[in-house]
Length: 313
Image (cartoon, rainbow, N blue to C red; front, top):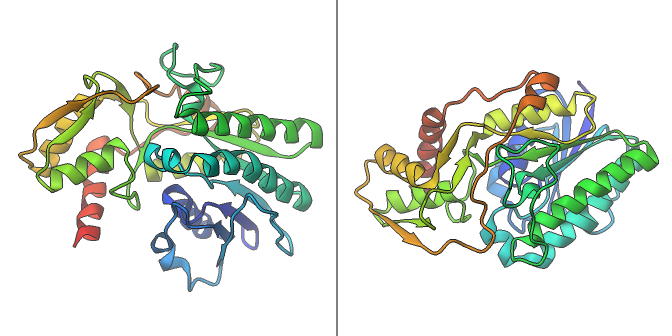
């Protein structure tokens, strides 16, 4: 893949920065576009001096003009945690709609393969469990989470329209809960929130009764699945996530044990439209990509905890 060029929107974010690393490792040149609304320059600092990496501060809801050949456009720009997309609801809708349109336009202009970072949130609060790609979802379009859920659903529809109408080579990855290094401690998701509270000896806040479930995938596994999807010929959505499901209450207990914390668990009211279950059916990823996660939750949590300890020092 030497001399091929990939554009990663949102490349300074948690997932985007790991994706930049992987693409460079595979021999590509990477152009990272990010307006740093929720991304951080620290995530890509180690790449700045790399001759195969270029960072451009840019809001991708505006016109994207880049000279020369481009082989891949990977659209990862978007607030992705509830705290972020509730803080930036208009920006979230704009990057999912206008930003996707501009990124698709760039891919069409360059004849590049386009990969959309979608989300398990397109399934909403699912009525089918586990969730397979042929499930259409149960989403509240006017609820507070709708700004993220519907932005991603629209982005998928727009991507498929470009594929069908313009013949663009496209991929759609539906990303399930992911964790690992470069997460922000304050991003509001369960894992960093629990670890932060446990490390500080604070009570751990579990929303609802804690019986709601999540399935956590370590970031290296996720990036591996995305890279395999990029190199495949699959144009329909593919779930990438870890099907090992756990209740939020049990997960909080795991974090307490891992951190040797004396924190107690307290319960607060469940946020509106918070999904009660979340577990990917990864049959399609196994069959088409030969992919499944390898990193155990215990191993991944230790790696993540070590990272959070480093950034707190």
